[in-house]
Amino acid sequence: MMLVDALIGPFVEFEFMRRALVGCLALSLAAGPVGTFLMLRRMSLFGDAMAHAILPGAALGYLAFGLSLSAMTIGGLATGLLVVLLAGLVTRSTTMREDASIAGFYLISLALGVTIVSIKGSNVDLLRVLFGSILALDDAAMMLLAAMSTGTLLVLALIFRPLVMECVDPSFLRSVSRAGGPAHLVFLALVVTTLVSGFNALGTLLSVGMMMLPAIAARFWAVELTGMIIAATLIGLVSSLSGLILSFHTGLPSGPAIILVAGLLWLLSLALGPHGGLLLKLLPRKHLEA
Amino acid sequence: MSAPLLHLRDVTLGYDRHPAVHHLSIEIARGSLTAVIGPNGAGKSTLLKALAGALAPLSGTIVADATLRIAYLPQSAALDRSFPICLFDLVAAGLWHRTGAFGSLTDTDRRLVHTALEQVGLQGFERRTLDALSGGQLQRALFARLILQDADLILLDEPFAAVDTKTSADLLDMIHAWHAQGRTIIAVLHDMHIVREHFPQCLLLARECVAHGSTDDVLTDKNLARARQMIEAFDEEAHICAQDGVS
Image 1 (cartoon, one colour):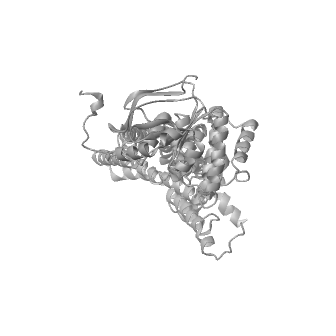
Image 2 (cartoon, rainbow over the protein chains, first blue to last red):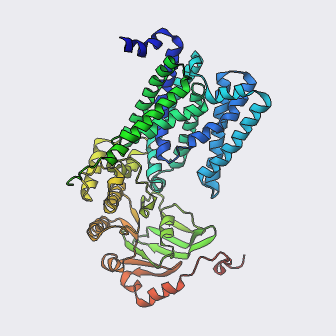
Image 3 (cartoon, chains in turn yellow, orange):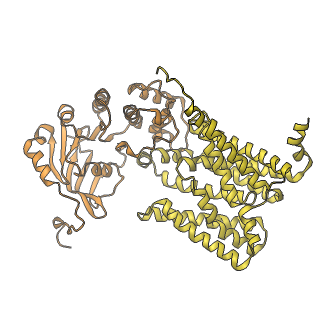
């Protein structure tokens, strides 16, 4: 009973904990699949770059309208999408590779963001944008999070086949369809939406964690894409729940607690995972007959 | 003699204004089986890329029926084998003309995929991921995908580059079957033995057309020696092509 109390008690007793849980679960549902594709496209650090890129928009929104969720969200979305679009245009029209053009634009964006914050605000404001606070989710914020997660999943389902083929065999896709380029751009836009919807809850930097850590942990639990996406989503859900409980009982800040749990799960997967985990590699195992 | 399937009129192909293939004017007959040969750097892959529509000519035109369905198998390097999808899904993508980007696979579609896998000898491998396939198995899988594409024109870029003799013999049977069905096939090849044995038509390229016609007429010692001589290095300082006149 003690254990059940410790695990369920906080959510039964406090509304802010229930809201935090719902928000985190909604975020995990979208972040897992999106993160899995990022990892498989060898773009694991892209989320981090984009988290920096959305800063100026979010900061402008904050400075103009105060702590308004919608203003910060729209601002963040706008700058994030702008960076993705510009980088996509540069990649397609010059010899510059995508990672290099994204680096260029996100660094400009980040510098602008820091400038805006330092001219107008204080460091506390910057911290608010960077680290969020899941325990202060209001109705509007929760609805927005849920809506953006739902939208992300629907759109991902829609572009799934072209996106997979664009990853596996882009030249084949080009020979049968023009959907490859648009699918990639739409996917990058989904990354931005997921990040932005997470930043009020977890902050920009930690929502990257919710996107990447479950995804890279999932690699050790499944061999096929579908399995990996399911595993990533489950690991995200488990991290959200356990992180919130941990934070409630220890007084740790909730966002970092969730990410620390996800990080721990990744390390555990790395060590114990059935597909490529370290333990199975170290164990002497006899080879099979065929 | 029916109208040619493809008509290249004074086509020049290249990258960044430097031509890889110069002033090529040839006709590809409907239902023909053609090998494209030539030294390294002769522009063979570039030609295939252009026929597939993946590279616009620098000048000249490629005339083809707009409804022509083309299947193109580039050299296998472009494929990301670490991506975690299974063989079945890779091969099923050949049905894109039936499913499109969004449609689901029907039972008929699934049967077609299984039949294609049987034809290339890969039944039982459906759930294998791509990194668990050998080079030969992967090439068989890509041929299964070509079967499903059901194309009028099939373009193959060095299809036997990384496969053993048994596999290339099986894949050659496949090519003959397509030929018998009246499809047009153009393949870039290096093995002269295979070309002489299996390909009635031949195009010898050396950055321009050295010879085009029946394989016996094309593969003469004189033509081959000429092709080797004509290959020159990619020249950064190249002048504007004189054949285009002073412009």
